[in-house]
Image (cartoon, rainbow, N blue to C red; front, top):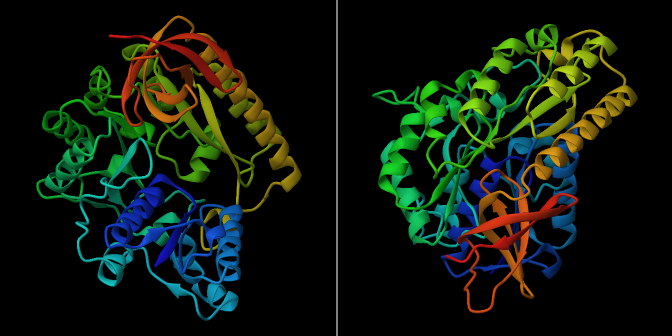
Length: 415
């Protein structure tokens, strides 16, 4: 059987889709693109914004048009099963809670659910450590689609990390819906920093990258871990707003001074660290002055890049019922201003890399040139060297020789 898996949204979805693909591949099914008219199309949807909802519906329609049998899972289908049934009654819907066991039971016989790395399509392996979220941000629908935080056992994660390394990967990306909650529901309780320490002890050379983590969950213990060469010098720390009044309306558990203090501690402790952030513009009640405070706050911070989102109304959230919603045109303008600021910051950071030695995971290799991702989360391109073997997934050292738009140029260091 030919199949394709289409994925929208977060790295948790990407990790789950990788697992689904591996179950099918290891049981003699063949991966194909949608254009190759697969027999089955599995769509892992997202509902974090209205745009994600739209994209989910479009993928379902495209898959049906291609003539495939369609299975839909993910957050959009959790909230909108009746709307999916309106598109087609033939679509099968699988809940988030069931997506792991469902595909194993229906299509698999040999796949171990805790070791999805063997056929991982990417050069950097995703390792999902938990699901769900205990927060109650007023704008967010995800706790309704994913439920409360549920952590995987430490032993299971270590087993998967070893499997990833044995499969030839040199980078593990720790992911989940809210990784800072890791371990609070386990008995005995543990925490993210302790889990990372266990992974370091029980693997040899693979490096570790953290996905998004809240500023209030960056502990002294976690900061000390960044001093280890095997921890990528990169953090993604959501801000959402640079105005304390808006943060309070969002029910975020920190203020701007908390954020500043922790980010500065991180940059002081970790040389050349790259820190990115998420920002929502046009939250209900956000005035022009509020936005200016956000812009000025971000401009003053050592952030390297931003993911900017115009506020998107999510039904059944507290923010949806708040007064003074911001016009779409104004949200679009504010988002553009922050994206321009983000580009300025990233270009300045990239310029500061000139002459530095960076380690990168090789991701693409073609025609005597390769591209990789550095530990500080930049793309870098370099020419291969005759007689020096370069392989995808492997780590290489390069000295930065220049930059072009959104990529660095580098020269291989032959050891």
